[in-house]
Image (tube, rainbow, N blue to C red; front, side, top):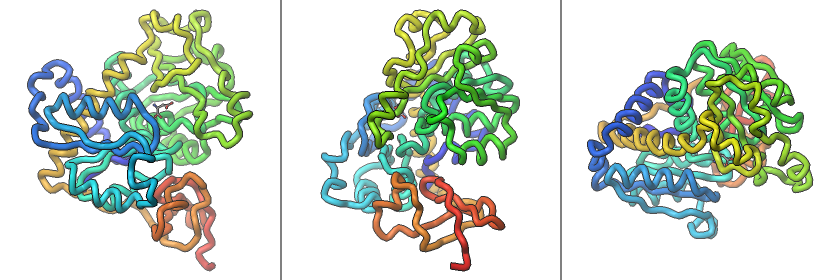
Length: 366
Ligand code: ASP
């Protein structure tokens, strides 16, 4: 069954096709009002969310379908100890498509391997958030008229900000995109994103902690909040939470056609005075998210009805008893899950966990 777990599950042609459908929905919403009549979306949210869950629900309702689901782990059988795999099998009997958010990285992937309906990853831990990326891409496309040849600044929590990881992966597939990574030392982009995406795709990038210095070169500025829920030590969060605050004054040197994005919720990273600036696009981004989720639901349901199935994970795999050491990985809680790694450098024994993408060095002889 075709699911969307990682933004790289979609080809560039498919991304472009989703953008075209979303634009068509915006222009002719009445033509889509019955497109999913009789279909049900299940929103399985094991972690708090307002925007993403309601965006999925609004998308399905505007397509004429209906919605079931829950919005916190306590109100699901997970609180009784049910596995993600079993939850996916059960919900497949009730719904035609599933949107899942989970604090464990790789949980939506496990769900997709066990569901008989398409699964959409609505955010898994600090790993990825592909439908936010669809919203971001549509916003950039609508503001700039292109997704290539531009300089994009990412500012704030680049370590735990899953939307940053997914958007960099998506932009790496368009030519001429240069990335400026603006963060404090402790919140730098994880090395797996640097090696696997920026280096392998030969994407130009630079790292800095100076927001004001970087602003004049940017076509797009992607602000993010510091992800409080991912910190084990609250004191570290308190020290870092206000690392960057975008103000009207800091925008003085910015390009007149800069586009300012933020996946929301905003805490303090953007002063409310910036909202009146025509370059502020973060509320348009919310509307664009709903349109892209509509286009995605249509696509996956259409493919499911035509029996399109997903082939297994690509690449050279290793099934091993070595456990993934990332405490946020779904393999730390889901019972009887095979430990599967994808080789990145066989000679040096470097692998990435299939579920959360954390790196491991594995000696095959053991
Ligand atoms: N809404 C986005 C997410 O779910 C961004 C955030 O929470 O900061 O990742």
